[in-house]
Each structure stands twice: as C-alpha cells, then as structure tokens.
Amino acid sequence: MIVSGMSGNEAFCLAQKGFMPGEIVVGNSVVSLGVVGGIGAWGKGITGGELGAVTKMISEGRHAAIKRLVKEAEKSGAVGVTSVVSELRSLGGYMEFLAQGTGITGDRLGEGTFTTAASGMELYCHLDAGYKPMHFAMGNVAYALGIGQGLVGSVRTMARGEVHEFSQMYNHIRHLALDRLRKEAREVGANCVVDVKVKLQPFGPTATELLMTGTASFHPALGTPATDDDVVTSELTGEELWNLARMGYVPVQLCMATSVYSLGVVGGFGAMFKGMTQGEIPELTKIVYEARENCIGVLRKEAERFGCERVIGNKLIIKELGPGLIEVMCIGTGVRKAPPGMEPATPLLIAQAVIIDKDLLESNALDGGDGNVPGAAVQRATREVQGGGRQVVGCVVGVVWLFIVMGVMFFGAIAALLGN
Image 1: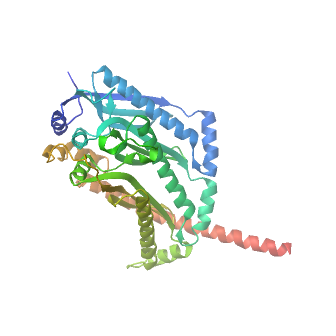
Image 2: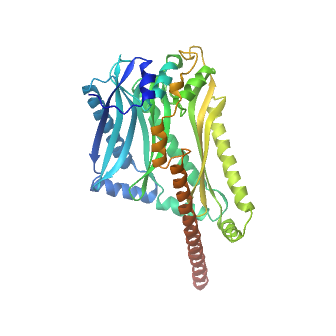
Image 3: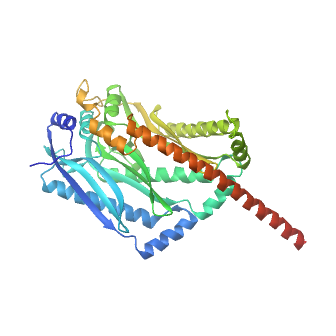
C-alpha cells in the first residue's frame, strides 16, 4: 500500500516521463544553539550583519533533514523525491528542521537519488525542456540589523532620501545567499538552479533568516561552469521555463536589487498632518516613486553586467521597515537568446502540466496566500487593518523619538555653553 501526496495531474505528467508516484518521505533534525553560540550571536546582533554561528547551525540542520529524507526515500525504492520543502519550526524551546517530499519510482536519471523542489507537473516541464534534476539546493544567511547600524540609520532617516547603509546591507545579504546557492549547485555537478524561491523568516528575537531554495539541475546545452558565478539561476516556474525554451530564450541569472528610503522627519510629519484630510500627499508620492525608479535602475545594471538581454517575471515589492522607512525590492530572471539544442522535446505543453490543482488553491487560501479566493481576500483585509494600526503606533513612536533627539541636542548645547 503506497501513501502518496501527489495529485492526479502530477501522476499523469510524470507517467509521460516513465515515473510513478511513491511514498511521502520525511526527514528531520532537532537542534539547540547552545549557550556559547547564543552569546556569540547576541554579541554580533549588537554590531549587525551576518550571524555566522546561527547561519551555520541553520544550514547544518536543514541539510541533515534532507539527508534523512533521501535515506527514507531510498528505503522505499524511490529513484527521486519531488516537491521537497525545508521548514523550520520551534519545538519546546528547540528548533526542528523538517524536510518533506514525495518519492517517485521508475528509471534512474543518474547516479544516486535526486531531490527536487519541483512538483510533478513542474518536473515534467523541466525534463521536457532538457533540465535534469540532481539535488535540492539551498543558500541561507542569518543576520541582524544591529544596534550600531540601527543608530546610524536612525540619524540618516531624519533626512529624506536613500539610506545607503541599509540598502548596501540588504543587497549584500541577498546576494550572499544566492552565491551560496550557486556554490552548492556546482559542488554536485549542476550547471543551473531552476525554480528558485526566496523566503524571509524571523529566527529568535533579533535575527532573520534569508533562505533561497531551488533545484540544482544539469542541461547539456549550458556547458560546464568555470566558476560559481557561471551557474545559471532562475525563479521561473516549470511551465514558464518550458515556454521560454520554446521561444528560443534561456535564463541567465536571478537579478535582485534593494533600495531603502527614508521619508524624513519633516516629510513624515507633513504627511501625518496632511493624512488627517483626504487627498494625495505629494511628498510621499514623489519619494516612493523615486525609490522604485532607483531600485529598477540598480536591477537593470546588474542584468547588463550578466549579459542579459532583458529581465522577465520581475516582481516589484515595497514594504515598511519601520516608522518613515521603506524598502523597495526588485527581483526577476535575466534572459538572453538560447544556444542551439535548447528546444523542448515536445512541440506543445500538455494541458495537465498547467492545470492548477484545487487542493493547491485551497491550501493557498488557508495559508493566507495570494490565491483569488475568499479566504485569502479575508486574510489580506485583516492584515491591512492590522497594518493600519501599526502605522498609527509608528507615528506615535516617531513623535517620541523626535522629542528625545531634540532633548539631547538641547541639553548638549546647554552643556557646551556652560563649559565655555
């Protein structure tokens, strides 16, 4: 008796490539950072930047869970594991790293058991487009903003415009995670990482983990990468990757850019008072527009550096980091004309490979995703209401902070006069 997590569409698609659904497989690892590591992470959290001990612990925990998942899959006779996910959970004061996926049976694609983040439908698209899955790859960075950088940033946020310290730190962290993802892929003999996903999640009271996952794969037409930077990366879905190959294009690199902008003390207060009446707030409209344009400009330069002809699938994300401080992020896949031998095996993509399963839509709604269903809409509305409350609190905090700064400056001036 086989207990599988695959849908009918996934099973049909994989059957076209000679595979059948296997058992659900799981691997886990429960760890503790320890007293020494905790103190070191706390100390680094004061100065800011990457928390090396935390990054290493998380990476080792995630990889240990993946190794156990593969062993369990091999015991069940699987030749590969699809839909692999790596999760991090709090468990009684400890951290559990959980890896889960669905094994498949059939002819082996190479030596060993492959693991892929792709679903059965996406795996069909990858295989048909010539991408052979090898290993579920990860790259992560655990970091803290730090009190030191926070104070510098707080002073800079009193003026309107880009806060370069924050922009540089966020850009460095994201590219560091991408570098580690490419390095891991090259170590297993892959020349590309497809279906890359980016995830940010809190880790403890002061740390945040940036995690990038994807499927390290090999395409014979892409050649052997000379360096880690030559490993192709793409966040396109399986069907998008297939369509791109059919159009004669190939992904080059995942391109990212971040711009952190301050609304400024004056702009913040002006917007707050104008917000009491209806109508546009020109100061905020202009600064948010400038932040977007600057971010897109940085993205364009990065794509040109990689030799991309264009960036597709670009996502422009804007969020509030704190009172009067916003982050704009651009992420997309740089592409160019494909070399010979990149055409898909079949002339048309089968319908089952693009059908969205009903179960996926329902789970997306329950998780508060962006599915066009009532559950997701209700949860988005709830988050917007909660966000409004946070903005009010942010204004109050901003007022208090301004008075503190003005008080320090006033008493400092008095002390200077008395000293003279």
